Length: 65
Image (cartoon, rainbow, N blue to C red; front, side, top):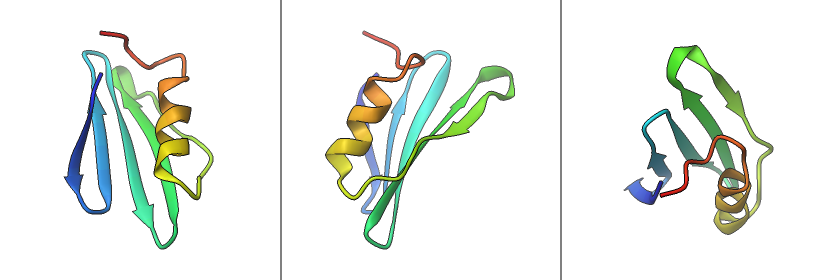
């Protein structure tokens, strides 16, 4: 998976089985995962985009290339 900028407030990493999305709301970054078969969960918010990306990349559902 690789991060791509969707807009100034949204980043996505798309894999074969699911997608990690980070949205900025105010000063916080809110990561979440949506997978096949309806699996969906949110990760804790972060005050830095780098921390939010690291949380996603360290998650079990992150797909290595």
